[in-house]
Amino acid sequence: MLGLKLATDPRWVNIAEKSIEEILTDHAFCEQKAATSGISLIVRFSDLPELVEQVTPLVAEEWGHFRKVLKELDKRGFQLGKQRKDEYVIKLQAFQRRGGTRTEQLIEALLTCALIEARSCERFRLLSLHISDPQLRSFYHEFMVSEAGHYRMFIDLARAYMDRDLVDARWQEYLEFEADMLKTLEWRSDRVH
Image (tube, rainbow, N blue to C red):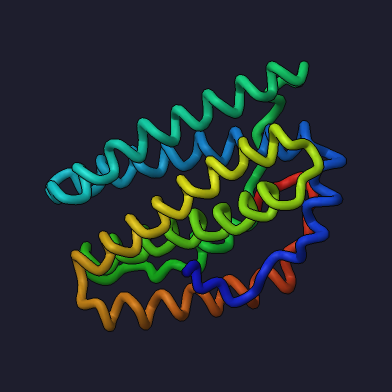
């Protein structure tokens, strides 16, 4: 369903759960950034009613997720800590085509969001299947389902604003870029991406 070209090694979970405080902290900031990205899309493209209608609930949901992860951190006696740079997202944003029409800029933003959601979904799936803590398995299953829906929404929005074949061709370029990027990106057990 996600179409990712390079799967995450399932052993990532074994390493990630050893630094669960760091994973939860990074996850919290990922949710905060997702809410912020949604707000930015709404502000930038406020004249597109379908986008505003679909992204507005996403913003509320992502902010709710941020609060849920904060609650999980607190329950485990952890603090939020400092935000970190997300090299994964920075590199995806650098891949976006600059210039072009406003619609082309929108498609680049939507596909970037779709890919971030798809990779998050894939990682949360691994956590929901393989993490040893049963409560966290359930916790991450819920996030996996949500991220899958967000991924679909962003792809569907892109196809609503531009020819499907053009969107799908560019999406394949994103997927290929991401797979190549992951081969050289520093592998971090304390990050969602």
